[in-house]
Length: 179
Length: 107
Image (cartoon, rainbow over all chains, first blue to last red; front, side, top):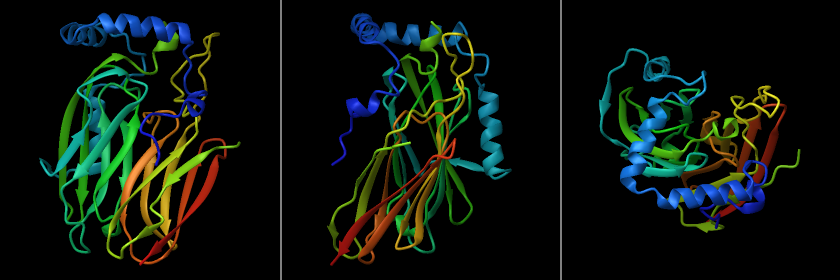
């Protein structure tokens, strides 16, 4: 079995914070209540602490249109599963589930996930087929701040379905080394 | 570039069963949006795509973007059809390429 948590020795390259900083952060975070986290998360987004390259909801829409074209996107069938409150935006578990029989004639062709505030609007883009048996994809993502994510599923009949989730992030990815 | 990959596939399965496949590979997934201490942009170094073939036929493929966390972990499903080999292939920046295989016996 692959453990859900990253293996410490594998994390060595990706984790750029010193133990001391992480300990301090953890201490600070323990004192933050959910209510404060909401305010804090909102404030980070509002003060524009994001890098100049950060995209905007408009760019997310453009990125979606680039994939979907002019087709109508309906709500439903897709479930985007993310924790509502994230302490560390560097690794956020994400599961996309699409309600489909996955038969030869009715299956999910592709799953795309987009974000609002990371420097780049795309998150993943997966190609599936009838041989998948089940349209469920899990991965771990980075989030630069509190934002909305949208998952879009392309079905074999050419229809598009979507789900949107909002995630509150207390420690954003990408930005920490700038502080 | 020695990359460690972990793959979790059930060794045996019943024909027609939907099996879960979990994959994890060690990689920094440098976004290309971060700055070093001297203010220079750290160049992008990510895995850009991952695919899985079941006895030669591609069953799953995914394009990864910088928004994927370090050490990409991807889970997906497939229907166990026949005994054989599942081949996993990661491709990334700077000529990164890793291939792994897993055997499955379908009874």
